[in-house]
Length: 345
Image 1 (cartoon, rainbow, N blue to C red):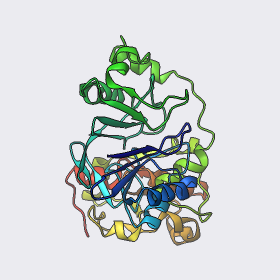
Image 2: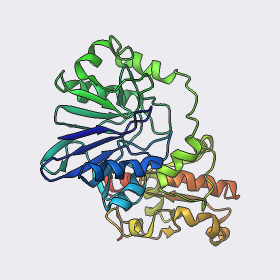
Image 3: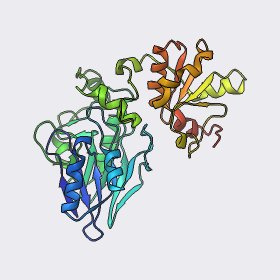
Image 4: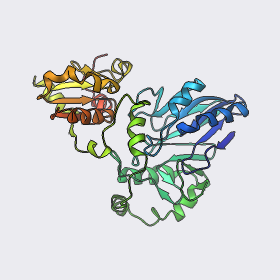
């Protein structure tokens, strides 16, 4: 197997390749290093077939879309990933094949709702779930330290002790560890109960990443231009959340609010479908088309997207424009489908 760590910095990117078929996978690419990844692949005689993010990053712009476009590769993420333009959505227990190489997907939420790890060839790529000597923070929107603790202990720590650990970030100059070493020495986990871990993670008091405003919402929406001014991240937590059960109850009683879907057109008619009677205005077009909603300025609006993330951004934008009753469908069309509620295609 061809294997290379590509960044040699706090943010880690890995390239894996099958030596027989010359197919390759790039894990957690950074946007500004796209040219470097293409050069390494070309020099090594590899063709990049897949680019994968282990989770939605908050501290740098993801390079998955640029790299996929230039390499004619497929974008791969967990099914809970909020962004559009993902070609392959993965679930825990599924498999990623790179030529003759096989990697098992471990669903590891907690740092983010869409966290995954890849295990195979004696290695596990742990994203920001398990770091060397630490764990990824869980205080962003959608983070859950309890789920993170379970994912580590029930998933990652069940792997063989000699499994090499390659995280998505490291701030101490490390390059790898092993599952056995992390089980024995990781100060955030050794001798810590689930309740103690949750308490610890809820009170870390870490500052937000320097680039969160320019990175997180852009990565969640795959919008890579100045067409949209994103609201402050702190505003997103002030948006009212509407559950799928509450919305379906309102619809069945004939008192449905205006349902605004802010996904891309191909998603609206895609596998998840859309809610009957919903209005489509993609997020990137919302500021320029908000006037189309002026007749509903005093009405309740429930905004919908794939996972309830882009719609939170959209509801915040509408709120700033004077739509004071704009709320967000919690969990989006993923949760709507998982509840087996009716959709149209």
